[in-house]
Amino acid sequence: MAGEITGMVEKRGFGLWLTHLVMIAGVLVIFFPIWLAFVASTVTQPQIVQPPMPIWPGDQFIENYTAALVSGVNVPVAVMLGNSLVMAVGIAVGKIIISLLSAFAIVYFRFPARNLFFWLIFLTLMLPVEVRIVPTYEVIAGFGMLNSYSGLIFPLIASATATFLFRQFFLTIPDELAEAARVDGARPMRFFWDILLPMSRTNIAALFVILFIYGWNQYLWPLLITTDPSMNTIVMGIKQMFPSGDDVADWPVIMATSILAMIPPVLVVISMQKLFIRGLVDSEK
Amino acid sequence: MATVELDDIKKRFGSTEVIKGVSINVADGEFIVIVGPSGCGKSTLLRMVAGLETITEGELRIGGTRANDLEPMDRDIAMVFQNYALYPHMSVAQNMGYGLRIKGLPKAEIAAKVQGVAELLQLTELLDRKPKQLSGGQRQRVAMGRAIVREPKVFLFDEPLSNLDAKLRVQMRLEIRELQAKLGITALYVTHDQVEAMTMADRMIVMNEGIAEQIGTPLDVYERPASLFAAQFIGSPSMNVVEAEGRDGALHVGDMRLPNPAAAQGPVMLGLRPEHLVPDPDGPIALQVQLAEPLGANTLLHGKLPDGTAFTASLAGVHNVGHGGEALRLSVTPEHMHFFDKTTRRRLT
Image (cartoon, rainbow over all chains, first blue to last red):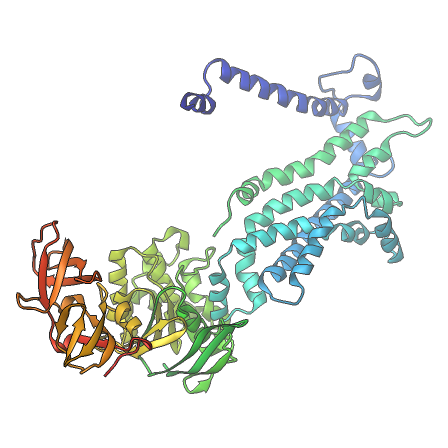
């Protein structure tokens, strides 16, 4: 037994090589399509359609990316990026605010039917956007929020997952801390603002990363409620670029758009990586 | 600085009564220790004074004014918690100044006050640290500092020393007492440690199952325990209690005949503190020693009386007793005999 355990912890010789080989192969498999997309975004249309496909970057980088950003196919990609950014940040920030407040209410206040409310929130976990999409559309259309940022953001803000996460975190904070704040004279919102919020910092960062990507990757909902191309988001925009009928696909520009669409989430993950990992691994107590 | 009056304070959680009516008038500047085993309601009582629990019945007055329905912040109290409850993301200085910040004092004034208290508690060098970077004793001091800096009318301590090691506990015990005396602020202090209670209290409340068994000075409680519970809870090793019967002008414990200073008639409970027993070849008490614990200055002898009751004696100096179960005769002076009623368990005479 002991031998097996050491063997697992420190791989030597052949084992070491094998694990690295598998890892490198895995990275290549995941990275190769992205590489191809990048290559395709730097060559000309004829070079793409002509077999064999190029696997090294061409010299059209600046031309293709400028074309994508400034004119795009239907709408300039810059506009779609902006829309996506507003939507993703709006959803992430909105979800975090709503869930922090509802978790705060559920954990720190005794009000009638508190548990009922908690389970009602929890129950909505079972109803993802796709399930409630028709009635939600009806409501948003009724409010006249089609083709607007509020229409893109509000229906996706309510979040049982984040509420649950914050609830669990708040439950680990010792009661004495709330009591000490009370004795110090802090009213509930003051306690929330001065104590709970700073203590939840890492959790908020971790959630922000997850929710930003969730918002960024929304496809079905923006597709439904934005008919005006200037309100398109990038993820659905890529699909809109695909040719229909006799149009010719401008693959270099589409590929450039795909690469551009990947950059913001990557930036968010990288810039918040440290906080993100701390938020998932430990909590400041 | 203020008086604290508890007038028949009761607390019920649903139908269970956890505090069954406690009354005490705490004088200005007095140090009161509430002592009792876990679950006796001592913390609940303190939390009711703090305003963290509602008072079901009775009246609480702080500085003469009714405080039952006041928020904790309006009662002008400061509390030190068992786990210190320092705000983990704030520095020591911010922790100490938080209450003042909420009151809306100007920054310079807060800094000056925090600085003053930090000097008093020797925390000056730690002001920029986070609680995580402090040792247990230092955290304890910061928690104290946070309480002092607000200049409250009343200090409330909820087992503040129980997370510290034994040596630090003795040191902090002294420090807290000195500080309190210096500042002259009324204090209520909850502990389960009878040594803390004995050494720190001006007066103490011995609590058991929601009842104040006895309220008095430490020596009072030690010398004239009002009930069997108080008698056995205070003092270490705890008081021997044996069943006795008064008849024919003497006190009979099994086959042993003891003097009967209280002129007790019929069955009573007799309490004898281990340290009041003296070896005496003609003494009335026959102890069959089973185990000796030499502590240096004195020796604890654990054994049995002839009728099988467990009994402990604490004799001065070193007593070499074999392991074979040696018989020893002891006597006790009449003023050190405590009599309790067998049913009410209260003190007689």
